[in-house]
Image (tube, rainbow, N blue to C red; front, side, top):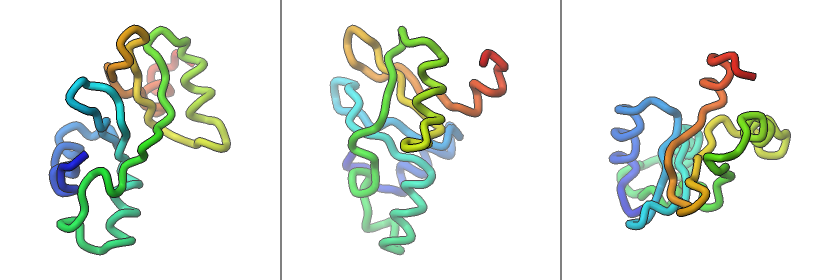
Length: 112
């Protein structure tokens, strides 16, 4: 969370998922930063060199556990209130983030 936005952008460019998970030293999810968060942070401040990840990240991201049904994830993402396209996936036993699930990937897989 203390990394610069520039570092976050470089990381997100290496893995073009549209988002990056923010975790603590124990790998527990403490937030998520999306392309939209970066745009809003830049639009508000104008200088990404002055911002750190925790300034713009979503500190209470919607997430799902790895043992959940795929349809549950789609329902969460398509919900009119949340309207999210990336969902952090947590291990149900440890609450550690084990990945990101993208709505785009679900649709492309034709599993739903």
